[in-house]
Length: 470
Image (cartoon, rainbow, N blue to C red):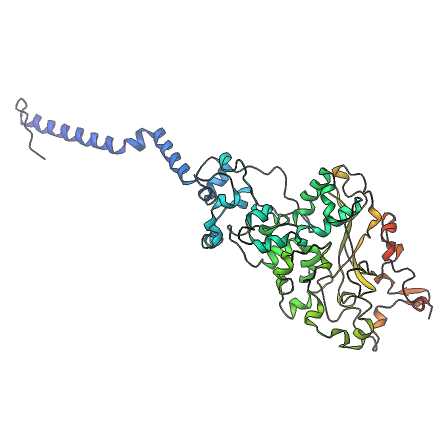
């Protein structure tokens, strides 16, 4: 630093003056350096807010910023609807829409990422205003409009999916018929409140493309399953079993009380897609009224060729009943559901019933078949303003069923001195009818079920000698 002299001051005072001068210079420099953060804190905070807003001023910026999602999320107004296995698990709203982790990185490498957020979801990008971003024609689940959104690239699948059972064709058909119409095509003629009840309750599993390939099904809590990653082949446990739980997945896994896992799982490690291919699940474009009418439905005979002649019992019974009559275990049943009310008023129970084949036009090769109690009841839709179905008795309250809990050796196929009939045929021993509980009789039906279901009850349909006392 240049030497500075003060001629009017003596030597001691000059030293003091120099010290004061240096102190003032350092103080000014210090003030100038620290002024933005320590002396203008309000302005500094505003600057930080601007920086944050800039970082979330896009769809991707917002949905990859977990703290910001926590700060701006809207609480749920109602809990996600559950399914046959009970209430859906709870995920916070911000967890359901957060894009992060390996799934998000996989999404960025996927061709769907190149489309851009508004390409599928509409709305407005490049804004930090949540209301503006989700305004106008914004759609949270683009695959709800799969023909326009997914069909642009996946035209064949989107065209065929119209007829997929995953669209709820079978359920809609039965609801329409019991309401006095002819089939699934007439579902749109039902009262708006009736359709609303279906969409809010039954449709929680019957979904579209995204429910299998991007998000968790509503019955599983909803929301992104893995950071917006697109999964080509759905995961059996986290996707298929979430919806097909008590009536499919739990049976296959051996969850039900007193049951074992299906032999196709324990011996072959098959998952759902081994038998149920994309061609079947997506639909083939040909309208069907219910799932057993699908041309691409898997059959036992596809793998077990010439099964009808493989042993004595198959030769005798191949034309009598479906394979599950002998090879299924007990399976889950429930019934009489109040949609959005009390739920199933016939609580879930493990059971097993053989009845007259309720699908003679579709499964004409069988006289008898395994059946499962359904949720149908005359007042299903009472909570939505429909006191009673107009034509409830048009369909049985038990459905044709093919439980996924197959074993080679069951309580019916185990030989007793070479006679498996001892475990299945009804026998009258001293007035006690053994094995009668395996069959659906009119006396097994509740009063409001009898008129609708007596046509498939086995009364007077079984060999008379079975009831003769030995």
